[in-house]
Length: 59
Image (tube, rainbow, N blue to C red; front, side):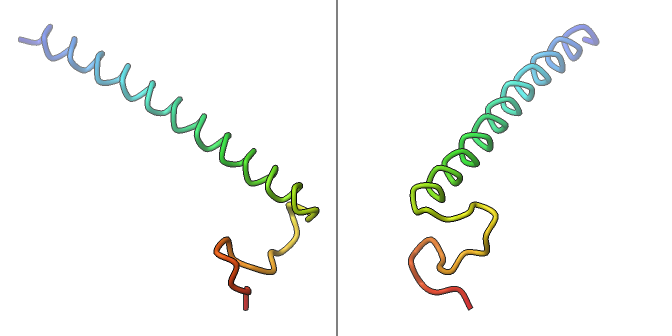
């Protein structure tokens, strides 16, 4: 029984590592997308935005 539990834990850990790597890639790609969108609009990516993503003005 202990060997089965150990095997399942190893499988769970491997899946969690895959999920973590996927989430890290998604976060990196979103950061690149935000940077590209800011550059496309001619704005400094570090500047305080004037509008929200839906176009409404920031207050």
